[in-house]
Image (cartoon, rainbow, N blue to C red; front, side, top):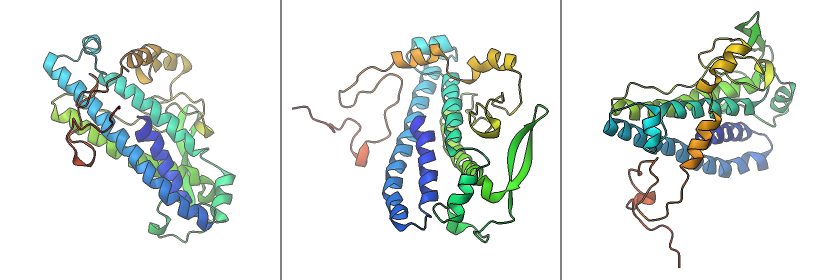
Length: 269
């Protein structure tokens, strides 16, 4: 989850810096973007394999009972959803405050652009243009227009969110193919925020503003618990024999560079 969501933040930040008029910075990002692409592949394919193993065991045991699945040594889908909620929400905070004078300065001075700046059809100056950001008014989430230059963190965050949904859709295909009536979802962008106007506002994954009491009562269903983390940690055993894999993850479809799955990549002499 970390490499899928948090390294994707790196992709978007680097793509924005790739538009910099400071050429050494813009050129350097190209190498780092190659690395981020590998990280994101590890994240997407890794979570997909975890899901595959889980649904295989669910069908073998004919159950969705969390305790029975944990007894079988796999990570149940509700726990995966809570980890998804956590990593997504903490990652979108990394884009910064939804209104930022620093973002306006970086853009106007040419130090940083937007994601895929060259594909945008506006004047690339943005003065007089506006963008909608979320705020809480009387206990409700409402949009308000702010100057585009000051909302560039939010623009990048929204681009990131659109990109993130794709992998989650592909994970759901694994679950759907197994015939399991469960779907992973990306939480609302106001959920579990610690940065900007939404910091500290209690919002459910569905985007409903809730009271502190309701948050405290339901947080265990929305975010990884101490018990979840302890269980996942307990699974982290060492497996080094070629062709063997931990019981909570399915084998890959093929090895790296199309090698067989049991290829001996590392030899201990």
